[in-house]
Amino acid sequence: MGAKPIRWFTFIVLVIGAGTVFKLSSLKDAFYVPMQEFMSLSNTQIGVALSVYGMVQVIGNFASIYIADRFSKKILIPLSLVCVGLVGIYISTFPSYYGILVAWGLLALFGEVVYWPVLLKSIRLLGDSTQQGRLFGFLEAGRGVVDTIVAFSALGVFMLLGEGEVGLRSSIWFYSACVIVAGVLAYFLLEDDEIRTTDNEGHTISKNKAAWQGVIQAIKTPEIWVVSMTIFTIYSVYCGLTYFIPFLKDIYGMPVALVGAYGIINQYTLKLVGGPIGGYLADKKFHSSARYLRFALILATISITLFIFMPHSSLNVYLGMALTLGFAALVFTMRATFFAPVDEIEMPREISGAAMSIACILGYSPQLFCFALYGYMIDTYKGILGYKIVFGMMGCFALLGVGVTTYLIKMIQRKKASHQTQGA
Picture 1 (tube, one colour):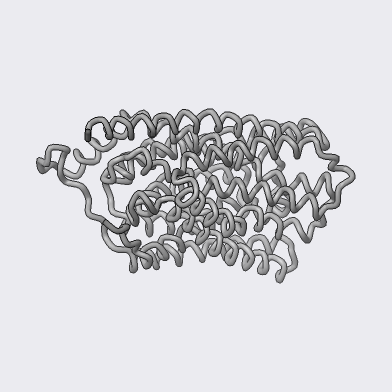
Picture 2 (spheres, helix red, strand yellow):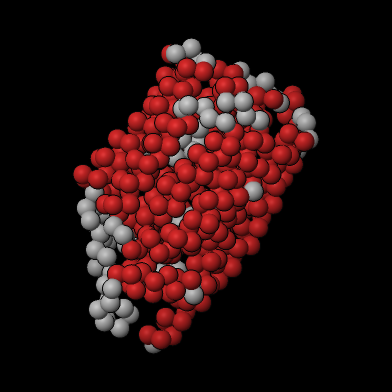
């Protein structure tokens, strides 16, 4: 039997939304320094706002376990995108710090709780088990294209309007408009989902009961929790990429003009490289997303350890940029594929939404503490010491990931062996 054809039109519509929905919550990526200057935010305050975002995301994803399989993407995706844009308009007023915390909480509610698990479910269902690495890889690549275009356009608006308060506010307006337009497009172009209305025995049941049965089934599956822990370790490393920006500025003396451009490349453009490469290697070379993730985590552990002991004070800024971008590219190959093992552990496709939501709960929980912790270390331990502590923590998380993925691979092997025994 041939591979299931991918519905590319639906994929493109999903990618457009995925490439715009997090522009506002990730405002720091291109405007870290302007946020500090014009919104009066310290490293720690930005970190706490992101931790609030993570807290709402993790708690809210418990509701996502039910929501993602209960309602159609034609409702949830447009609604969440438009709401994110409206929150962005509020952020453009430069509210008080407590207003910032509320705004980032709402961005998490609409972007992470309502939107993201539904998107992941929709992407998984576009192809079969032989295509998962590439599907999620191309998702990251597509997001990278949209991310880069939108982010550089916003940076252009900022520079055109004088790189001041007006420029930052206008850039936020631009981000808000983009995500609202993406929501309107999604409403008119996405098809309705077929919501499950039967139980495991084939009996007709209500949509609510079917959704709750899927929740229970997913929660009782141990493999999904190990996949979630894999995502947790990788995402903890990913959180540290943000601090390459102030690291290069403080230690290497990177010019302010390069800070915004580097931030966009570091967080968005690398998806263009990491996404397809990670997906291709997982599907075609390793024939297993879990095996590829273990390999990449081993490489990440070694490379960040070596980076810590380099003589940074005597290195050229462009070499520092190249080294950090190279490490970030490796991390993005893992980000592109860390949801793919959900298919490898043979989760039933009709409960994909519940499975993806569980993966998000634990997998993205580093947002609860990593940004605040990393920011605190940099603010407390001045100079290069604070950054080395952060990079050391990233290395520890990568090493933990090696152990988790090794266990995941053994679980997958046992499941396959069990199927072979039953089929004999």
